[in-house]
Amino acid sequence: MTLTSDPAATASDAAAFSTLRSDFYGFEDLLPEHEKTALAGLRSYLEAEVKPVVNGAWEKAEFPREILPGLHRQPVFGMQWDETKTFENSAVYRGWVALELARVDASVATYVGVQNGLAMGAIGVAGSPEQRAEWLPKLASGELIGAFGLTEPLSGSDSAQGLRTVARRDGDDWILDGAKRWIGNATFSDVTVIWARKADDGQVTGFIVPNDTPGFTATKIENKQSLRIVQNADIVLEGVRVPERLRLQNANTFRDTAAVLRLTRAEVAWAAVGNSIGAYEAALKYATERQQFGKPIAAHQLVQDLLAKSIGNITASIAMVTRVSQMLDHGTQRDEHAALAKAYATARMRETVAWAREAMGGNGIVLDYDVARHFADAEALYSYEGTREMNTLIVGKAITGQSAFV
Image (cartoon, rainbow, N blue to C red; front, side):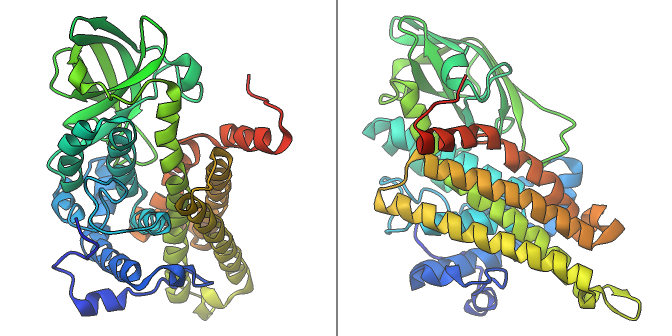
């Protein structure tokens, strides 16, 4: 994969999307030229090929799989893994990718986060060189779709202590028994990284499990009102036999699981900013076109107040996530840095999407105007990859030296 836009995107297309007006302080200008060019190409592709289909897919609660070939040709997948990258890219650029994806649709951003960050991340962080060489290129190209199975029906925030899925050694194989919940992509993925506790020593390890393995079943979670495009599944593992060669060879404790989450948590914060921007831009467009009392509602003070508060939230959040990704690039980012960014950006997102909906009045609840989708999707982004409460406890421990975890 190279850092270029889709061949279908022309130079003039990319030029039309070379800047993001909602980046009020121009943080994108901190990127080097080759990353700005790649981002402009991605922005052009998303506007032309993805944005037109997402409202219909959201309404039907279906993933528009027809976008995947084009999406996997974008400068998005495999960026941080040695076996797949062909250029030197930054964590800040990867953050901007998450922002751009979520600006168009948070569900598509979540698909990429699961595929590129969690599934590929687990193999990239905890896999052997042979496993990385075998699996990462196929996942990066989209030849295979991946999922990440950590959360369980009775274990979410307490995964470190509460993981109930068990792996029992049986000769050269492992037998997995347990259940997982809220597993994105799992209804149509080819493989799922399953995290389980070893029966002999209680330590956590991971397995690359093909979804067609006997005893593995994934059932779509129905009736969601947030991230409806994401195909979340309940997974049941009943005597699933997995060879030792598919156990992640460098996954020996929950610390190795946490290392994957540490790499992706900041990108969820970036996605929250993107979701905020998607709602804000839709509200701004509406405000300039909607006429009330003889003039656009954008000319009314109360609407301008909502829009100004929104751009303030967005700008402050971009500043925070830019800095936390710079720290990752410099090797100085710690858990509490990513935790604060995720907690802060998602809280500001919740405010921003509510103000955008308010600015649009009754039309704010109709999918046709986009804000309703961003408004609903914000609730899932607010909770997954660490709730606000859990992230504040990580920050609280760092700044006080005292653990408030139960």
